[in-house]
Length: 426
Image (tube, rainbow, N blue to C red; front, top):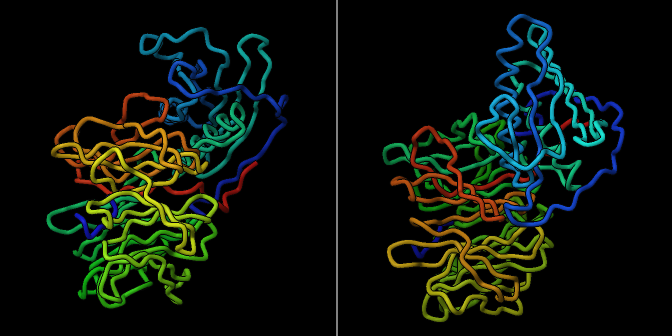
């Protein structure tokens, strides 16, 4: 869970994405929740061309594209080159195209064809350096999701997290599918609770690197030079950017008790939002920025509460479960995920913003730190379900959680990035 008293982007790569004519840009399908409602599609091998070794990278691209589409929670994917893996109902669309490699450059000419009419419903071309070929594939996958749902996928997003090696806990980042994990800090200290700025240009985090207790720092994933945001006496933890990026909600204990404060984005002009004898922490903004969920033990044990963004209208959200913490507001504003204690560990639950409809969504092992994907179809979280603390993704439609590869490192406190801005798109 987030730091609690209780317990790159742009430009990632200069890609040139060229739009060619989409023959039916307005094609949309009604995607309902539930694994059984996923749209059956078939991935065909990308046709290699150009250099002699084009086939090697095209085979890798085939697998990444199929994995992206399956992980989108929109499609049920059959791989034409591996028909024994999945046997879905007849595919409603075929995904394919051409993969051309010339020296250090690659061109992906992607195509989506309606399986019945055999007409192309999406054709799109992407070009970039061969060394960044995965990003071209991720963008094609996101555009396919956009074509069928009206909202782009999340294959091109990033995942920040905390990795432990020895006693040190450092800030790391990787692609949303677990590829390319690398550290952003090397302080030999302790990092906690990363949180992305709304444009994904900055990461806010708690660190003990200053040597005087937990402080709030921020860095650009590209420049990797941390800047101090709040080093006030006492606690400086649990930072979260407002949806407009102009403010930070965090926990400070400058006045003697852990309370929720609102700072400007540079860490100045503190405005105290809570005032109780209990410990108030783990603020989470609503997507409109009008409300903040947080954890408080003012009722005797930690429970999730909600208040207006100016600190007024505080009310308790969770009642029928014990010890709740780590609220996370969904991108669409219709759900709040949180953890609740269950014996020796925690489960992840979800409720409506008024507290109704509370129900478990992730069980098995101990599960903490729920954070939403930008499309609201997935939750990333920390779990020890396989014996070590690692990162997992659960699709809200109930599919089995999948583990993210962090190279065998202990990993926790994930933060799913917003969609990357500033990219060149068709």
